[in-house]
Length: 111
Image (cartoon, rainbow, N blue to C red):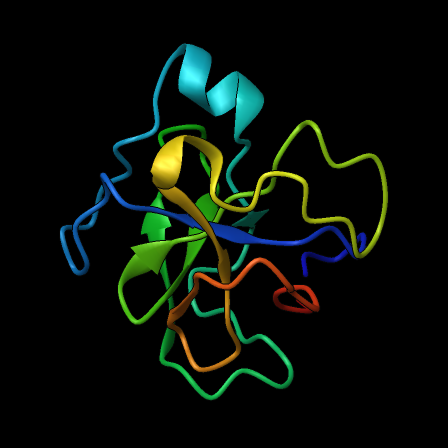
């Protein structure tokens, strides 16, 4: 989950370690990046490797195992995961840095 408790997601069109997000334009309005002002961020409870990439707005997008993190505009509150499996390319981010592809999820990361 992000700092507000919203579920975080991975996007299959991203490439781990590329240093960029493939979600731009209209995509980023529906799938907002999870951002931080700290280049060296940490996420409590995450066993994957936490990092950041510049987001072009003077802040940084959080990554786990080199994959950018996003929330979903369709999730109205903490713990919701209605974006799970959208288009067969959006997946809840697990604490180990892997996609959770099952239909039953328990959330993502806490920032």
